[in-house]
Length: 251
Ligand SMILES: Nc1ncnc2c1ncn2[C@@H]1O[C@H](COP(=O)(O)OP(=O)(O)OP(=O)(O)O)[C@@H](O)[C@H]1O
Ligand SMILES: [Mg+2]
Image (cartoon, rainbow, N blue to C red; front, side, top):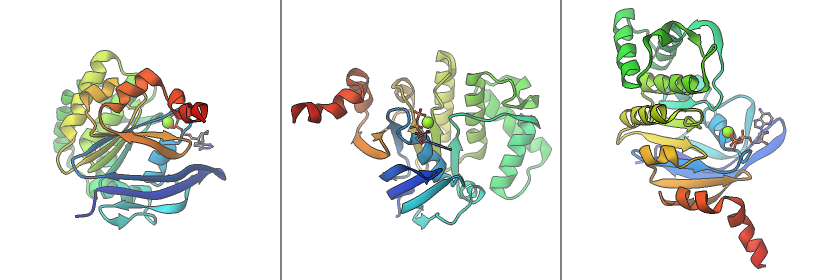
């Protein structure tokens, strides 16, 4: 069977600037992959390219989702196929309530609207799972939300849409210690043997809860290193730079 997601030698540019310079990555169903790497190395660019953000142009390589080349698919079509992205910087949509936003998102992904009553039940269930305040549902999307609340809303969205393949871009940033645990447990509940996860993070902490089998380091648009669950602890000790500069020092 084809892998859930296979990225082959992907190159991409934004505003005419080359950012991804040959990224290859394979995520099988049931796997969690962590993606780390210095600021500006292209992690969010990769997320945007995976979900088909129109500003980001693929210049070479392919993205295969369940064996299908998704190059020609728009973002909503990718979402319908089960792909999901939790943004690093979620945007506010003033005037649109969280409940309406989520119901519309669900309708778009499923192709049909869910009755208000059963949607409310589903929403309540997922909100309880993530320890979300009930008032959250009637507030405007991300409008005046704290950093952590924005990240929780991304995961609430994920829990509702139940994607097959999700990219979580620094979902842990800004979450307090309890929220990190609750949100991580929520992510684990949404995950399953038929699902895949690409978890972008700078810190080991979330990886203690959502355990990756593979960890990659993106550096200047390329995967510079890949390893197992032990890699983040090593990076925490050594940093990215010392490692990269080591060969130069030895030469
Ligand atoms: N829309 C854009 N317009 C212009 N430049 C962009 C855009 N998106 C990304 N870039 C540039 O691409 C490079 C990679 O950015 P990206 O956001 O992918 O990095 P990152 O690895 O996610 O960093 P961080 O860890 O800080 O989130 C940066 O130099 C950034 O300025
Ligand atoms: Mg980023």
